[in-house]
Image (cartoon, rainbow, N blue to C red; front, top):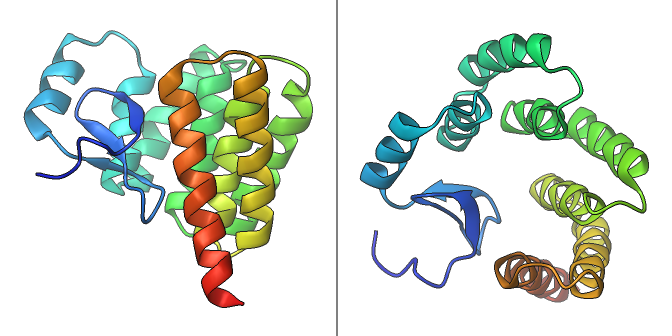
Length: 168
């Protein structure tokens, strides 16, 4: 796919965040395939299945992985993502809010807020998404987070604000 070089990184080779939908999207299938082949992290194929929209397949792998590692933050995030991909937005938002509360004051709070905002945005709760993205951005800047994470929050916040402005 051309023209995706300025899209925010999604944390996995060959996948970037679409600045219009704010959802991860495969932009280089070869890079994704190669990274999956080299990966030993059970969360990686779950993430790719979610990006591809295969919620039921992701849920099966997730159940196995959660059984082995029930406290994994990343796998708990993917549990809410399965709901989001399955268009069960209210339940996904509820789970992300629980995660935000659980990780409040930790380095993971910004990531949980970013996921919450993305799900709120997808559900059409644009004002709430702006608030979540704004908090995530503030935390990432305050924590001197990686530039890619700050950029991702900036793009998401700007997109949500643009959509909100168009609605008014």
